[in-house]
Amino acid sequence: MPHVRRAPPARRIRIRRARATGLLAAVVALAVAVGHMVPASPSPSPSATVAASPPATPAADVPRPADPGDLGAADGAVPDDTTVFDDDVPGVAGLDPALLRALRAAATDAAGDGVAILVDSGRRSPAYQRRLLDEAIARYGSEAEAARWVATPETSAHVSGDAVDIGGADAMAWLSAYGRAHGLCQTYRNEPWHYELRPDAAARGCPPPYADPTQDPRMRG
Ligand SMILES: [Zn+2]
Image (cartoon, rainbow, N blue to C red; front, side):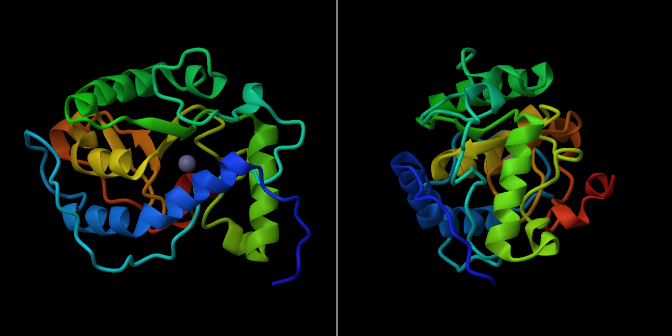
């Protein structure tokens, strides 16, 4: 991989990434343990124990630009500790209304279990998505490898407002266990933070996640 000169990341991004990568193994293990084909059934609260087997996929960060440049909140940059109730954050307010309703219903349930559903990324402008993709290409060394993690501005469900990246390991674990009751499903096995609305999931369970975005037919558009 060629050496790539990058601006030093902002402090809050370093903290966020440390938190995301440090806890990812447990989340992936839980996601694997819980599975996605189990029929929906009411459960009182998430299990307190988390399986401790190593993750099947490489740990990766929630995509956030290391160098946001001139891209700001209007493009989808999300402040720390943003929740699904933060109407004043464009990355949240710009989400598809049905997805946002489902997220808020889920977050209300999760709060009853003491879990806060945070938003690391929601709706993004095409320019923001382009920045993420360019950084991924630089980081992974090729467009093909970057495509496993970051979609193009034309295909990204974030640009259309139909996807959210959840923040916080406990939030990811909670949604992995209970999100389907609200129609919220993990889309990609390698991205335990990325959720989209699947209205049939409450009755039929979530569809099995794609291994990564390159397996998603929508990404070939
Ligand atoms: Zn995502």
